[in-house]
Image (cartoon, rainbow, N blue to C red; front, side):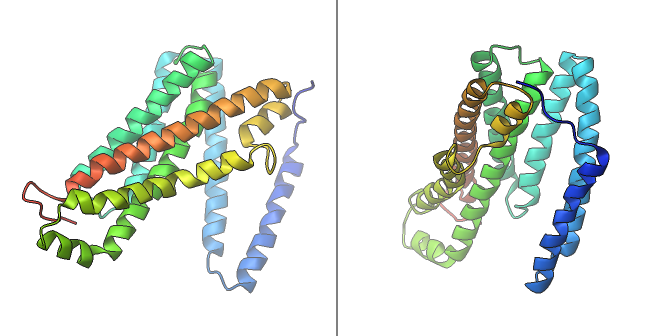
Length: 257
């Protein structure tokens, strides 16, 4: 199979014309997010261009230090994004989220690269793109799970406090919210897996096919990465919520949220 067709700069710029459709619909629907759309598009473009130059250098000059630094930056950014969107969390809960994201993300990346792909964890051409997909989905899952959990207990705070005052244990009250939030965080990944191959061809598989990889190999990679993503989302959200909710009450069973 031949490699991916090259895209000239002029033809690449044409894709931005599609944003005019989005802007027109936003204006008609009175959605005041045009500025955010433009900022997001520009920021995405600049970030990916910079990442492209960095990755080109790393791939041409492979060294374990570069791979470790890139992984560390991804983990740090993922943790920062989750915590910045959930500022009302206490310090202990934030630490739990950080450890859960780092441990589950790096653990699944290491397992995938070394056990499935059979490559060194320090080999950047495999580790960096795979870790981007795995850690990125973990970040999205944790953010959704934590946000759902906080919104749920905020809405039910008077009832929770009343039940505790009547002698109910915080653990018994909060666990159903934890389980519900974990389910909510997992559903997008599970729904994606259900429709994969029928409704859509996922990004990794499409990219590999465009680059000339035979479809059967691309399929094996895609199945593997989806199972890894499902696992990392489950692990990271489970760790964040099942350990984090314990920081919301003290040894005297006082609700601290």
